[in-house]
Length: 560
Image 1 (cartoon, rainbow, N blue to C red):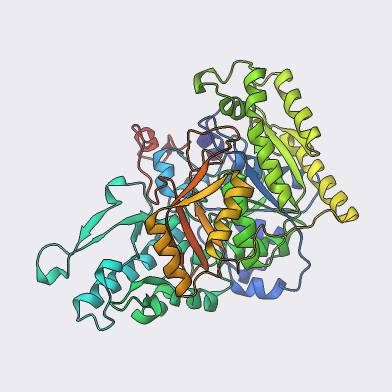
Image 2: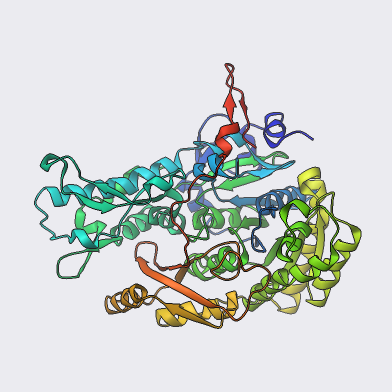
């Protein structure tokens, strides 16, 4: 079988104007970025705002493993399958981050015959959204240090600056840095640090903003630290809100691309649901709901992170209601959760599968707690035995959910027709019988600790929560400042339901460890850091970048 990039390079893409035309989008409502990419203007959103909303399908997964689950691949394949069966569908995906692309992923636009194209562009600079977010973030950083250098009229406490610089690359050496060295002319030295761009509050703001005015209002509320009296200092205080919004003028507009089978895809907003809220933008999702009968979107990592944040943060702010959840799992990943080493995952092992399947069971339970109907998609590999697949089918039947053997990697939309049919049936039955009773897992007005503990108990399965002295102080300060009436954005390892990546399956009897709590006032949520999760990933021993190249004709290889 061809590699992902070879499949993508042989794709017969349609000019993006034809994709737009198929959605009823007028020529003057698109802004071209070459032949196969475009941004959608505000005039489109205004014109179709009275259109009836379609059904929203959320694709999420069990906890990720080295074996891979294929959420994006299933999302893309499902969109293709919907259109192949004559249904009106659009996909709404997150944009890849160049750090992981060059680090461990190699690409993030789906795989096999279920990819979004132009794959090379999407995985690299795309339409420049990441660069715009980086520039806006770092403009604020520059303004902070310049303000201090020029006399510090706001009396910013250099010891209490929480705002970090960012870059769209995995670089562990930038986690902690010293800025301002080299004498008086270079400002005041202080400790600083970088986070990856997609974990920046600017990314969250872009994803949650309704329009440019809302974007500016959110930017103005960003808390960068405090003054010498302990009072919060905001981006609005520094007077750079307009300039930051100007840099994001184009980035805030959703991007239109297509799949290998020419299914339309809105790709906008950032990943990283383990350290940020990690969803496709509210603007893109709401636009997709107005443009098609089914809008299929994805939440990052396992449902304990991505889907929980999608429901408790994005749906709350965006006023959107999911119609169905698709839980992606693989036989390989479930055996890994049952204690099988990665090298042995291709061998049949029904005992390990039975041990590991409890991870899937917990994710099904979690989604049902939000009152949303669930369908399980088994991303099938050729090494999966019939006995193993039967165990999963029987288990899901006992849980009261439908299961589909999904083969979209190898067969494209054709391999997802059964999944598409079962999703439509599930949605129709749910609507007919009044079974969709979607609601958030907690009230955002509850105290911070109660919201954290609700997630820990209900979603992760923890017995309790332990707070560091720093976290206790953070919570007290945020509560005193009135920042406690917001949703919580949990930063946690994606590899386990717990905060310990080594605890596989369905851990119990553990305590969730909260080490730090901060506010993203512009985004509108409180960030809760647990365990040893980092906001700046590093590169692996052999980065994916080591296998990438481009020839004299501009042909790229190794971007898988």
